[in-house]
Length: 388
Image 1 (cartoon, helix red, strand yellow):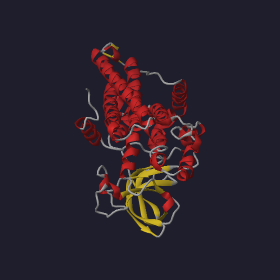
Image 2 (cartoon, rainbow, N blue to C red):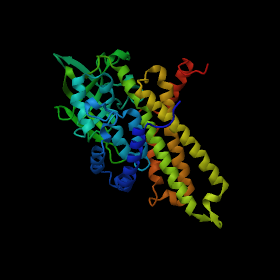
Image 3 (cartoon, rainbow, N blue to C red):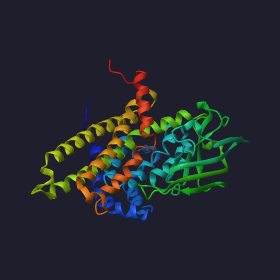
Image 4 (cartoon, one colour):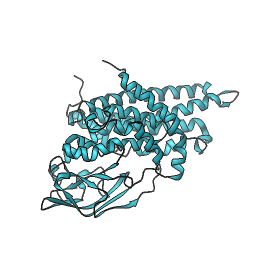
């Protein structure tokens, strides 16, 4: 059993750590304040080859895999969830194409994401269908050799920045809940009938727009179908493989928040001693550090499993555990770290109120905490996760 990173991944981790400290950290507060997309950071990521980390070399990426992207996102998340989301969006919309798309689709849409020439977004949720995926109402009907899509997607990250969208729609009867009634399509932003609707006002993770994608009689050629007609399983495989990447956002945020709080309590004095000298503070630091390490190991294992193609049903409990523990831990650590600073932690003079606001999103996106718990429990009940 090997816990050390390969020399290549260790070098990647150190280089992204340096980049995050020098380029991302100084921009985090301004991005939150202005809510403007940080194009400068996107260009930094492109120049550093980070937009192609999880893309195979033959498609223009570096082939570092999901583990490589997980490591990069962990480092960036120590300072900015917005920057981390930008990197996550190099895999979320491209995932279904990498899993089941034709080589032509991959070269047309995945390669430009890897090289930074294009950006994608992922369209699954709808106003009445968040966790209830089979409740989607976006409809795709055949028309000659093409498909025509109508409907509205919501809560789509990067909706205004994207050049194309991976969209799931009903190809069976609208009321059907059969898994073969949902199919994935690649839709280009420039096509007639494609429009961005409402952009959401968010509590945190500002700078990457989240909002609605409106599809009004959008004609999609047959070659833009991802995989086979009836792609519900593809949606689940795509999301399953993303669990460690979302988890990385959680552990990075937790690490960043705790490191900041520890430095503060080592310098802050109260009752004639440093705050860090109080046993209650020391025990809390130990508790949080231990939980971070546990979540980090779960996350790295999940990322390695996903790179090995282990994101089908029998491996879901392990992937969901990483997402569940890491994202809930982000909420816990950001709250405890803020408390260590007292009133100062509540002020914008320090980044902890920003961490605190950003953390909650992680327990909701790409499968809520409650969905993860259900998946883990199902895995135990079905003996996919068992101990003898």
